[in-house]
Length: 55
Image 1 (cartoon, helix red, strand yellow):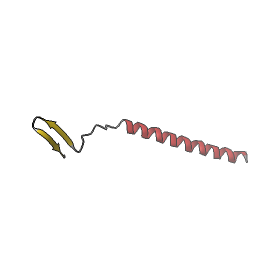
Image 2 (cartoon, one colour; image 1 turned 90 degrees about the vertical axis):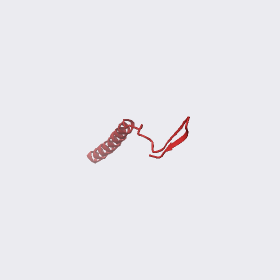
Image 3 (cartoon, helix red, strand yellow; image 1 turned 45 degrees about the vertical axis):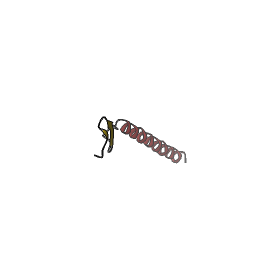
Image 4 (spheres, rainbow, N blue to C red; image 1 turned 135 degrees about the horizontal axis):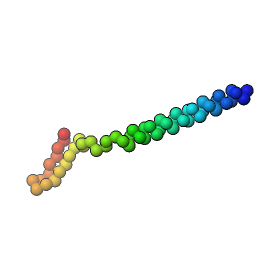
């Protein structure tokens, strides 16, 4: 009976570890992406007035 309980705990540790690795991997992926992509809408105000570029 003790070996059955140990296998259950091993699976639980494996599951928690896999979730932890997934969360850390997603965090690294998300924070290393370039979020400075050009916006879809640009509004500029200058001497000639207001200019709206809808790309």
